[in-house]
Amino acid sequence: MTVTVEPARIKRNGRSSEPEKLVLRLYVAGQTPRSLRAIDNLQRICEDELVGRYHIEIIDLVQHPQRAREDEIIAVPTLVRQLPRPLRKIIGDLSDTSKVLVGLQIAPSP
Image (cartoon, rainbow, N blue to C red; front, side, top):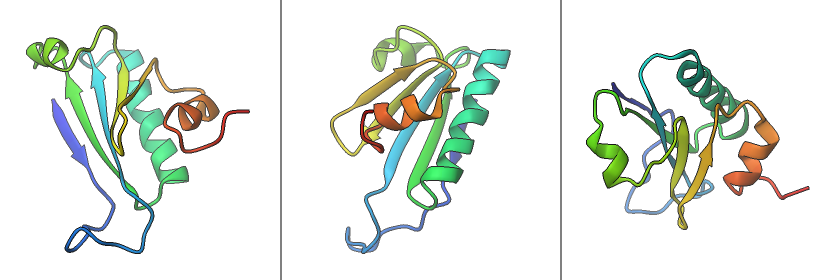
């Protein structure tokens, strides 16, 4: 399963007055309760905190196992912030919103 969710508007000519858009990849392993919880938590966080500023790609490593090696994923679920650089990885079901926001560098660390 590869699902793309993108509520944000497309930038024209690479310029926008809006804050920079986050490109996120969530790696899961099938339809396990932990994977489904991570998907739900990520969508909730993005809808609450990043309205219109995100793009999510969900990659199921059961269907695409080669991606684990290619993308250096050692545990699932893993969230990777592709953009803006640098890459940031968060492992787990993303249930702790404040830790996810700090990990994505959206909120300052406490």
